[in-house]
Length: 91
Image (cartoon, rainbow, N blue to C red; front, side):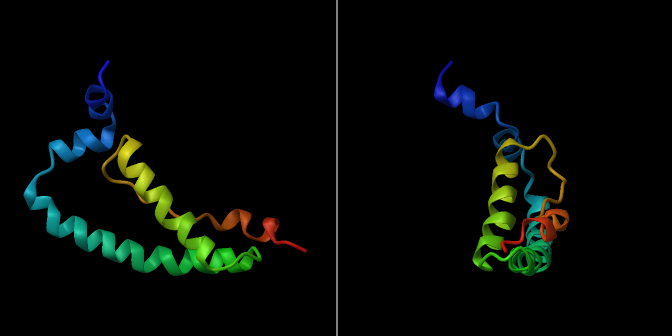
């Protein structure tokens, strides 16, 4: 199997190839709204866990980018999970 064939099997690449221009405005608005909510939350959860706030950016943005390539659904919200923040605080 060639590299291109392998890449085309990623769901995000398949979605990008079939992307409709009419979705762009809504997708940009949704991305901005989601980022405005999740970035501060991720930074806050990182601080609650005793970590520097910038680590919350990695926990917020990196999963969204990875899911865009390998996730099976075009419509899904990913973000930092607060359930582990209190239990992972350094002492």
